[in-house]
Length: 414
Ligand SMILES: Nc1nc2c(c(=O)[nH]1)N[C@H]1C(S)=C(S)[C@@H](COP(=O)(O)OP(=O)(O)OC[C@H]3O[C@@H](n4cnc5c(N)ncnc54)[C@H](O)[C@@H]3O)O[C@H]1N2
Ligand code: MOO
Image (cartoon, rainbow, N blue to C red; front, side):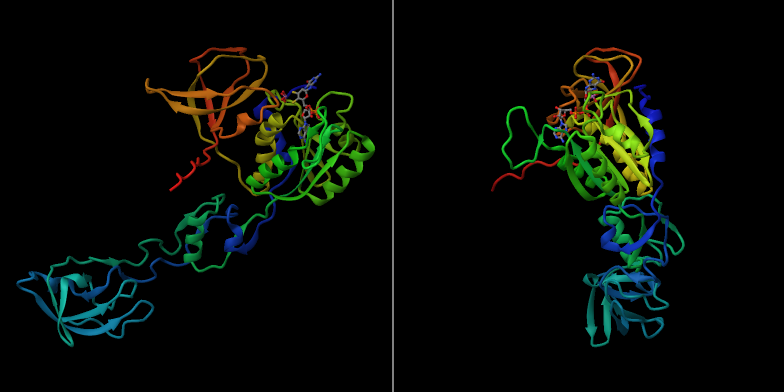
């Protein structure tokens, strides 16, 4: 197996699928998906000048000199509520009773908050403050101007984005559909959770792990199956699952052992591999190919290796299907311990970051083994130990690629 360098392999693998065609979906269904085109404001927000406070719309100049002791008295022309149109133009000597969110009457140039006023009679009001033009008015287009480019294609749709979309009044949004993912875990040693397992047997855990990783990447998991290391079992399972999915992900049987059959069976079915074996650790045996119109990702069985290989190859493909690529933040950090590695490989070592008293950023790297699962829990990213070097010492500075996932702490019991 000739190993492809990581960056090259990641680029080649993207050709395994083309982004899905965009579709219009109801706003709430788009949560967590990505805008398929830029968002142009279809109206201004607010759509006309509006009052920002409950009070009186006035002609600003007429309030000059108003104080508690020397109030300015104006005649109340009308009352304007939010959602209602003003009936008349404000004339000199007049104020319009107005409420927050109500459109300003023509002629008004400021709003006086009601706390700075007192009704003097049924149809007059005393003002106690001088206000400049524009005070407590939300001008047309203050938030958004009609025709403005508001959001870019690829923007992830979260609650804040949905708020913007909803405020523009369109019930639908253009997004690419989630990729349908089928997962096949292979291995004679695997036993389903919930059944007794002998010491030489292994609880099947990749189906849940990979399905969860796929869901985190926006996919819809349509099938999760187990198969023995037997060509006659693998062949129909792979064929059947490939038909149901945009992306078929297998785990196990990816290496060079006698029973590592997955790649051979896939090739015999007509799968063409764009990548087969990458110069990384963990995750070296990963392969990416195309079987008909289905992208196929072959992950190593070892759960820790499967996690890293998924992160580097399956996740970008699932995002590519949705029309986006992920841009992860990279920082420089010092290793909190030394590592020996195979010089030809890129090592991706999970860890956390801390700023020490010396003011420097340090990466606390975790034990590395292909089987490591716990090492991924709460990891803040990967320290990247690049190829071309075998030994790294404590204090050496390397790139650290951040996941930027939120962290949570248990709320304290009352
Ligand atoms: N002679 C060589 N041997 C190996 C090489 C090599 O280059 N030469 N590569 C090693 C590397 S790197 C990896 S990673 C592993 C992965 O190989 P496979 O993809 O063939 O994985 P399996 O052999 O099927 O399983 C490995 C390990 O993981 C456990 N496993 C598998 N599937 C699951 C599952 N669904 N749930 C939980 N655990 C699972 C399995 O029981 C094994 O312990 O190969 C090295 N070998
Ligand atoms: O992928 Mo293997 O996990 O490189 O050790």
